[in-house]
Length: 286
Image (cartoon, rainbow, N blue to C red; front, side, top):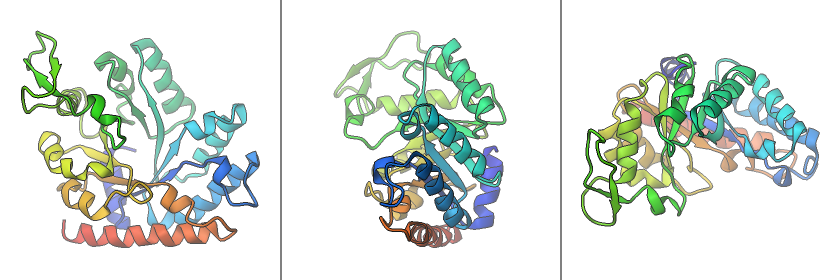
């Protein structure tokens, strides 16, 4: 599924909600907790309950990889359970030298058949290019994240910045108005198209969204952090939506762990429906 197909689903459902399946085995409802088979049962119940209200599911691969071989099997069975009408994301944050990235791309786009994967851009174009070779898939590049450590690198200002890249930028704390994350967004946007390239922007960075839209006005943004992490759906929608929607908002814990009881799926549906209802309102005034 490409960005155009995703936009069609968003407009049809009046929702740009992505449900994050961060299915931590230690946080499942009591009757499923600690049970490997319970993870799959939990995922299926969450998918059944939220399907009408979302357009995408994001599988955080770490929670499955940590379970060993069985975890990979659960991830594949979960993925296969999601209907093709919904955009599937492997939140794997891969990124390595070209020949290794080629294998990562093959693993997630061919063997597992995800629609999209998150990748880290730190190693440069040749580490991302193998993913972009799949023109019918979407590569989602980390742009500006919400974690405290994002200030270590992403917000640093660049000195002696050279658009032709004939010299390596020096990093400083106060020489220009161009920050490292801004350079990453602008540079990476040259490597793909709005159809096969998206960017991650944390919801708690909503104040930066207007500036980000000036840099990448047409690309889809995947915005995690709404809900449990405190991001504002109103602010994200106000500054993140573009003329063709261009926004996918992820909520994980706020939905899947809405209840610790056997009514967890019903409660997840109620939260997802609430998000969808608010999103429909934002789309009407877009």
